[in-house]
Amino acid sequence: MTRHDGVVAGAVVTCTAVAAALLLSPSPSFGDHVKDPSARELSDRAQEALREAKSVRLEFIDESPGVDTSSTRPASMDLAFDQDGNCVGSMEMGSDGGSVEIVKQGDEVWMKPDADFWKAQIPGAEGEAAAELFKNRYIHGSTSDALLKGMADTCDLDAFQDEVTEDDSTGTESLKKGDETTVDGDKAIPVSSVKDGTTTTLYITTDSDHHLVKATEKGDDTDLTMTFTDYDEPVPSETPSAKESIDVSKLRSELEKV
Image 1 (cartoon, rainbow, N blue to C red):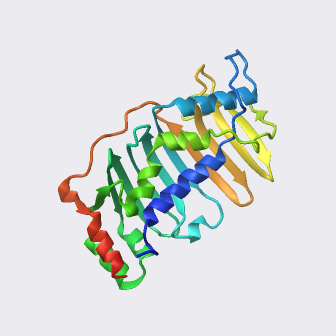
Image 2: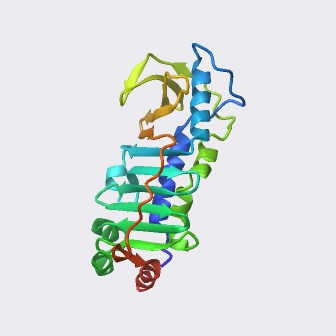
């Protein structure tokens, strides 16, 4: 069971870890609002807004070399989560690795992998059997279950905020302010930094709140894009029904057979 324990959780954690690494580190303090903020001031304010958000929707796409050939590497994720640890979203793996739907409310967690996911993670007849057994159903359990804990922890916006806005002395590269552009209808200013041949760009709204709406990382081996929307919007609270769910203990017993 160890080989498969927490597969979904680990994949989700990978997404948010990459997201955290993509963001530029803030300077030690945030300056007062000015009419024409510098690149550093824009970066600081955007991360302040992200740190103070009660909820946010994060969409993540990884088009880096190798993603399309790895069935265990997340290629995309769409996750709405809040500071209370609630979330709803989905994740898709590379190379026909399938997809997973995710729901968390309070201390309850649901995940619904599709057939391709089961077959990619559990080779052979066992994977086929798992895909049929759990077809169109959510695995349901609590946040204390080892199989679900990593995913549950990832649904905690508060922890994510601490990670992406942590002060770091490596974030001393010079920032460059670009020309105004539009991101999904919002006027935004790009703020970029280059390190070891890789360019990180934050797209920050021109309004007084200066929200981060998009972030990219581009390099020879890296092609990442994140978008941030629905700041402070409630996370959908609907949960899967009992008929749509199966207890995580059933999954555990099946994995023990592998």
